[in-house]
Length: 532
Image 1: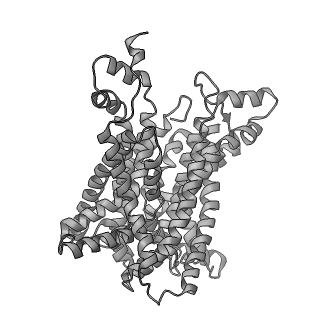
Image 2: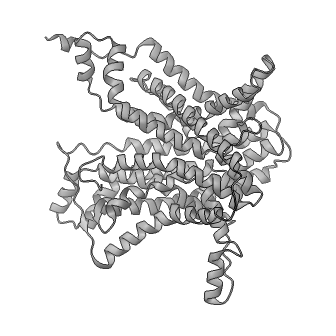
Image 3: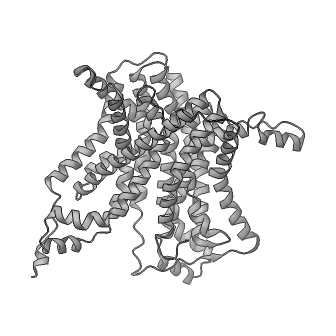
């Protein structure tokens, strides 16, 4: 027996396991606080059961509409770009993910203005047909349209990844048995990708339930708007916590769906080697229709609202000191939040190998809306302030709370790419390093971390984009007069100063666009035969 064979992988080092436990505890603490506050706190009487029921019903209806809208449009776009060839396919394959850079509230500002009574769309239709068309974006269907346009990339990316990594052998077997390309897709590729599509829909619905800026501006009362209102208007953390319990329950169900979807992603091992996916050449009107459909999604999700906001912004001079200050705070929080979150997620990934308890605990945070996470941090912060007066006062403590909220909520989002990067590690690599005299910590530092470097960068970019767009949690926890770009846009929009709101909204889009392009391009070349 060789020496290498005698070196077997051991459990993570004790300090790594301790770090993983601490990271999971940090993620779960705000959620425990929400439950305790909801059970033992005194709720405000202004939030009647009827009002809570209306919040819950609106949230459920909105989630259902977005699930259908984002699910169908995103899955169809993924099927087109992966399984077909048509003009512009190579560019559209990665460009369809770009709406992730635009916060939903930016789309809401643009579309509400476009479809306003005096807006250009209403005016053009009035001139065309001679009568006014009752198009009202400030409604539940209007909010569903806006959020579907904003969140379809979640379904598109998960469905596209499933199609791209699908088994060529299974498709070839279906074709050998007489199936047409379309029948092979419907009978083989689509059932294999269904769990991934369900996971993408669950992610889109999670974002829908967590959204505050768009639904609040469009006058749709949901559970998240109720949480913010309970805190900011009534000053009742207990009422906010009780509303948060409903969101936590919904988030837990969606997280379960998403996890079950990920369990179904193991069917691609039927071939010993990867080959280019068989694609169908579209010609004539079919090719034009495929290009037009993908362009329409990209236009509705990014180009049209961003273009309209840019046009509006040209009509108002920005308050440059406020805008630059908010941009500096947003980028500072984004970079700091990404660094802290990736550090904690790395501890979790390296320290929880061999057991999934810690990672499951941390995953609860990702399914939790930012407003709920903020409410959960208010109670521990209050207790700390009571025990040590002034401990959570001041700018530094407020920023620390914000970074904590970001890390607790987004730790699981960062954990996914890091886990995927570590999955590329063969046990033989660690054994070889150990055989050459490296300790387990040395093997992790010199072998595992370099291989996972790309995954760490991906995780950091994901967190950075999410922090830049975060609104409700920041709105609740931010120190006094500490406006980020998202908060500044919300303040302007609340005063119906859309031209001014366009400047910070577009700043978020521009700041998030580069990391989204990088992430989308990485997925585009993830497999031979994928669109490039």
